[in-house]
Image 1 (tube, rainbow, N blue to C red):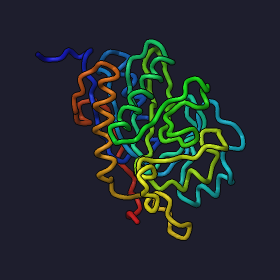
Image 2: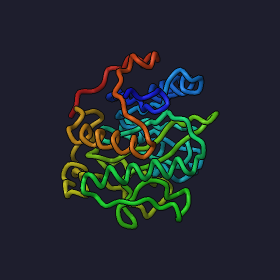
Image 3: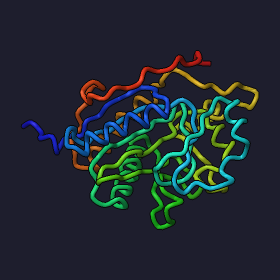
Length: 259
């Protein structure tokens, strides 16, 4: 039996998209979802290196002058989502669910539950920390290792922004800031938890790569996220091309060759 539009979750894989372009794109998708022109939609993508600062961001999150980050090739963007400073880069899976939301706190917990379930499929025991307050949003391994970040913005009952999961990204940019406003937090990744730290924490002498080819690990985990997200929200996932959204994705700027 065919699923109705309200039961569907469109899944659109965008590849690697600069953060500012993705911000404009998801806003256009939000307007269409708000007007009922699209069903709930999950955008999956990766970003070139960028720090984003949320509504609760404060002084001291950036350990160096903005010019220093610019020299590293990392953009810094202030956004309207909840939360503090976070990082995006190649090898990290980013999900932007553009979905209708009734109650924000319950929606955030559903997001976290879906991430925990997807990580369990990878053999990683993770958990959320709602009892510890907004600063601890996201998904954790143990008490001090944060693996996934969550930050949402809801306008007219439709959510944007979402989650970011460290899969096999270079983790050094996390060490150049106060991650999520928590000085004692250690950011971890799926690769780290599997003991593959030579990949994610190379020596300081090794150049920081601004771009790279999408990895099999990111593609594999994105499939787990789709299944668990649809399950958590009671939806039927339907893979759709970008063209189905009828929203123009900006042409990408030339990227540096992968290192």
